[in-house]
Length: 178
Image (cartoon, rainbow, N blue to C red; front, side, top):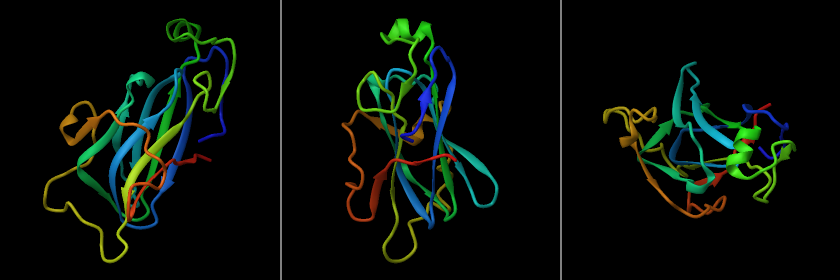
């Protein structure tokens, strides 16, 4: 989402983005990216059958230690699944004092460190021919949260350029929630 503004002094401002998969998809990794005011990032899948699932929660986001959260066993989602990413921003004077920014000013999306970002990357693969790989019968590889960190491997990596994941693999930012 590149079209937002966090108001001055606001300690809990939400911004969202989403991607709906038009065919069965294998999610390989999740990568939240923001700057100094980003306080948390949450990825949630909404399935065509009406259920939802927490995919990733980063409750204390810190841009100085960004992680790419790679599934140990890739996550297969059916066609019609919508993945929503919600970021919470803290533009309060208290956070500004700790992080070195002026909370009396609004902040918009931008590349400078003084700006903010809301890039909720999803690395995924969609097969060109035939059905996607499945994890059926091999146990659940669903919600990943602080109670189940064994489902992800986290590694420090440099930025993943959109579309550079190789044949059938995409790493792209999500569309703004409307």
